Image (cartoon, helix red, strand yellow):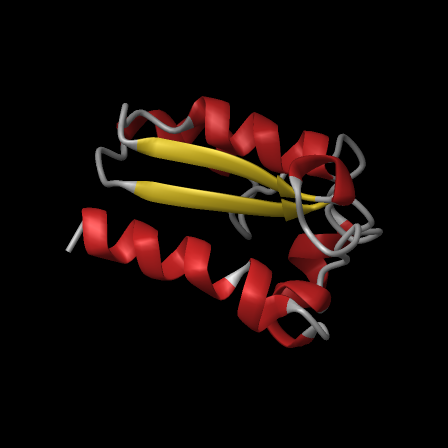
Length: 104
């Protein structure tokens, strides 16, 4: 089912397996604090795509960060770099820690 779901993304939208639910649109119903961290060098999910999901979220308690040199990170992060990159402990983890302290 998961492979079928990903193969049915010609328009770049994530949908439920039956195709009836467009997940991005369903996000407007969510009212929970959420932190989005996108990697500038991510070749799997571009920062612009992450931004569209951030913007679609219903909550006002949200933050969007692009992990990049331009934004003060040690490098332009890719998908795996966010969790296991050489400087993730210095760059990414404190962002998450701070966010969790604000929104327990």
